[in-house]
Length: 249
Ligand SMILES: [Zn+2]
Image (cartoon, rainbow, N blue to C red; front, top):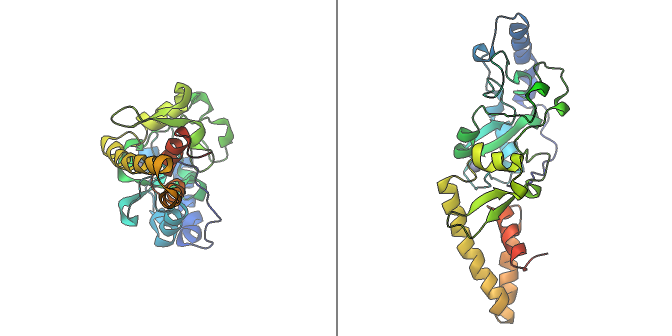
């Protein structure tokens, strides 16, 4: 998991053009008091190709949580704050419906991560949860790391000795623990197997960096640079590994 560096989203997408009309209807329904989160029907504007293309490209074709590369069609658009029912909230919480089409709330995640995250959104202090559209979201402290506005590398690292290559929370912090174990597929068995495959490649490069001749050393440096580049799958893990081995500052 790495910080996502995203530029400005495209202007005037189908989502931008239709957002207000759809939200107005939901606002009326919620305002009437006749609705709860299960009754709101959303138009899936976030799935418009231009929206999904932007999210996919800005995340360099990788899942926002586990950092696996996938084909575009294998990704789901993920709402960081759930648009509908929130599992941890009181039953009368309407969901964060007003963020359904908000670029800042949209990410793309692999199906494994998206299914695990589902409609979970736990907060450090439930009494600060926003129920209304104009509530200050800054009061909420989610127990889930948001890779769009914070650096996950400050919260998580890796236990390479474990055969499963577990990701773990630095200092066992609650936000890190929840992110890697409860709310995403980062420590899913299949994801760990894929990470383990990468570790074998990294170990080969590390050996070349230590013992290779001049020519091999230069090639190994190039490989290492490629592995730690944000464009590569599991680059957060690669950075952790090569730093730990003293190959990278
Ligand atoms: Zn994932």
